[in-house]
Image (cartoon, rainbow, N blue to C red; front, side, top):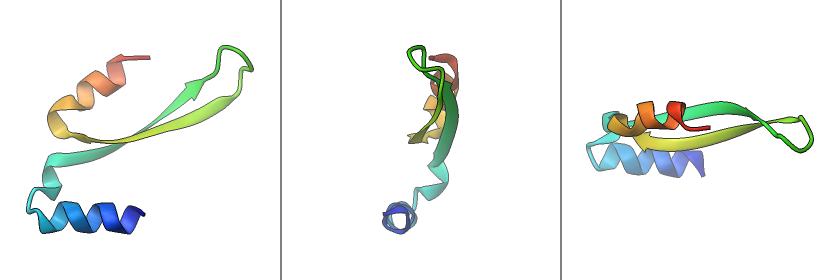
Length: 52
């Protein structure tokens, strides 16, 4: 799946306008950590890091 996403972004010519963000989030219920991943446009990266 990741190869398809990268290939599609590169063929569109706008692949450099996207960033893959990976954040570690702690669960309130169990206390375990999980990873949240998103591919976002560069202008939305700051908003991704601000929200919990």
